[in-house]
Amino acid sequence: MRTPAIQAHRFKRPLSTGVALLLFVLTVPAQEALRPSLAKQRSSQPSTTGDYNLKIGPVLLNFATGTRVEFIDNVGLSNGTTVPKESDLQIGTSLDIAARWQLTKLNTLQFRTTVGQTRYLAHPELNTSNLLFSPDSELSFDVFVGDFKINFHDRFSYQQDPSGEGGVSNTSRLGRFTNVVGISGLSDLNDLTLSLGYDHTTLTVSDQTGPATQGSTATTNRLASGSLDRATDQVSAMALLHFSDTFSAGLESTASSTTYKQSSQNDSTRFTIGPFAAVQLTSHTKLSFSAGLMSIQSQSQTVFGATSLPVQTVLNPDGTPDPTPRLTTQQISGASGHIYGSINITHRLNSFYSDQLSIGRESMPGIFSQETQTDFARYRSTWLLTPNIRLSSTFFYERVQETSSQLSNSSYERIGATFETGYKLTRHLGTSIAYQYLQKKTENAIYDYTQNRITLSLNYQF
View 1 (cartoon, rainbow, N blue to C red):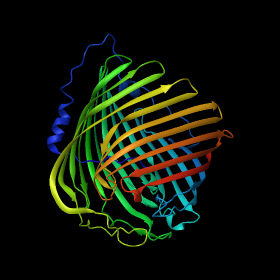
View 2 (cartoon, rainbow, N blue to C red):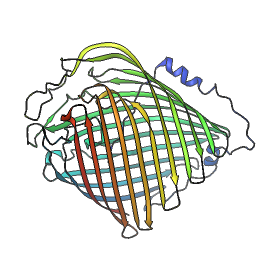
View 3 (tube, rainbow, N blue to C red):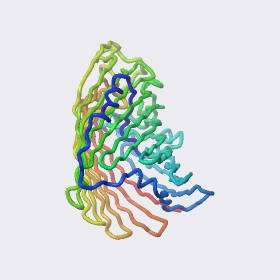
View 4 (cartoon, rainbow, N blue to C red):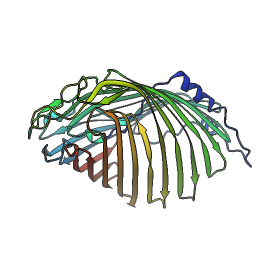
């Protein structure tokens, strides 16, 4: 299970006015034929129940379980020179849970998550101390009222694998809990779709551990408790025009603010606005595009220097204090602007093969930095050889620039590739084998690493 990049912010009054005005400045062009309202279509029919393997009253439940054995050649994400690589065999178990409750014809309560634990044979100190929750865990409640759809949600995850965070090196475990609670509304008026949403996000980092001495498997806390914890509020708005059955375009915007529990990072507000569009090029190919401007206002800007942040001392592999210049407590106000954008192409050749390519730039708060600007390229393909055999591959490239980082990785590059094949043994039982390669290059070689993983999984659908 992996944790994606965390997006979190707080809403400020001057920005909220601009967001609200977006819903009134767009005009709606005429179309030859009306498209039925999406919200009205969904509210006129009961939601489909889908597959389930247990029913308790009106609640439909679906369970699946799995186990995996994974070899990792570099559990500490170390460079293998100044810090030796340490390999291990990881054993993990998981349970998938999905529940659906059709409260009324129009109102549906849904829940899904994957919980699990991992054990290391050579490094038992890295065993999961709590249950892990997958990033797609969610409790969601949909309410349809005429042409309006209202969604209440709580999305949460708890992860400890550090490889999911690009800014992390020389780290064996990074416990982090993310919770997003919010509400969104959608109004689909044939030619025009409007949406407005609010989310409150909290990030709690429980520990960061890594090798304490040369060749030792002992671990130490790298950052003081609570120094990375933050809370964020965000308001988002979108207006989408449907020009035809194959082309839609609109305007989207967000207003947000981030507040840190401690003063080790800088509170900030941001505003984004930009157009987006989607076009069905052929019956098998879809192209989508988004771009815009982001304005970031930092209440204070931390300056690099020789004074340490109020966190625990970071140790070198030989146990001596790390002399690398750390962030100082000298702070000034600051503002910055960024351009973001992405192009996404989805291609489905037939019922057996599909792939997707995304290229773009994004900017968001990093787990260790106030701002992380990423240029990326990501590709994924899926090939169903037979009804029982599946092949998939994933490639990505990232070039990242960090601002006000608590670590020394002001800029770095990462590349990764995953190859997986799955085989359905029976109707309920399936197995897969996967290989993953990950490489990171930084300005300081002490933070470079490569990591290889080989995973064998067995899954059972009840």
